[in-house]
Amino acid sequence: MAGNVSTGTTSNDRRKFFRLRALLDGKFKTEDGGNGLMRLTDFTREGVRACFNRKVELGKTVAFEIWFPGKVATANASGTVVWLKRNSKAWTGKFDAGVKIEDISPDDRWRILDYAYQYWNQERKKA
Image 1 (cartoon, rainbow, N blue to C red):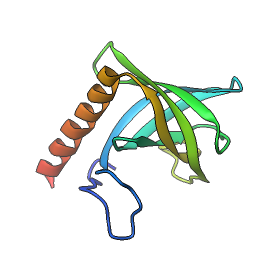
Image 2 (image 1 turned 30 degrees about the vertical axis):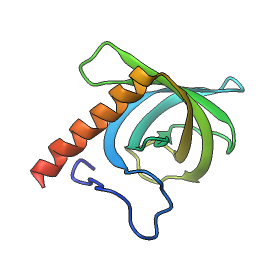
Image 3 (image 1 turned 120 degrees about the horizontal axis):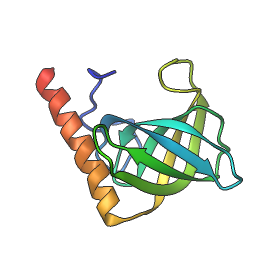
Image 4 (image 1 turned 135 degrees about the horizontal axis):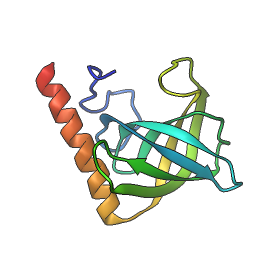
């Protein structure tokens, strides 16, 4: 996966913002009390692609805590699941979901996007 770096959107892509690929792990909690682990793989200004280890209902609010490698500090955010599909890749979890971010502090947003940019830039130099 590390070599799979997106540099933007394609003509068929409906995204409004530049997309960065990076890997960040964390945990999530749904509004109805469900919880689990996740891996975030895609980041934009408005949302993330999350790989959840359990099914999350479409349209539900998800709160998550994101862990940065080698750091004590975490980032927190919440948003709505806007798409969901089953995933067969063992390393990602069982379900891929698009989450539109609705609540995040400016500092946490900056740290996530800064990490994603640094990851993307590092991978781009390897290619």
